[in-house]
Amino acid sequence: MKARLVQWVLPALAFVACLSGCTTTQTKTLYSWGTYESQVYAYLQGKSPEAQLIALERDLEKIKANGMSVPPGFYAHMGLLYAEEGSQSRAIACFITEKAHFPEASAFMDFLLRGQGR
Image (tube, rainbow, N blue to C red; front, side, top):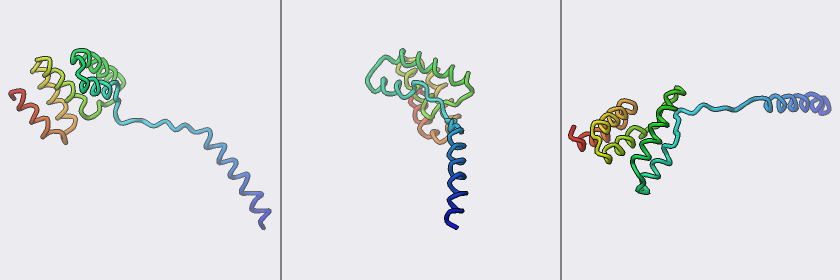
């Protein structure tokens, strides 16, 4: 009985192991982060808002071209950078866009919008 079990189980396990080696485990991410995280770090380090905005705008174009979604905080961070540069209208547009994409951020975006005179 034991020999018969080994005779069937071992080849079956070997077959399954071979098949599992043939599969790919490619996961699709929910968001495309681009250089967002490094731009937040650059902001905290006091780097130029202009350079960060250029990088984020480039990331945004790539994200949209690939049909992906921006991560939470992406537009809000861009809005803060635009506000720092003195471009209130662009800052407001970014805050409104963040609020539209992530309704859970509405209270914070409303707070930032009030700071922009809206």
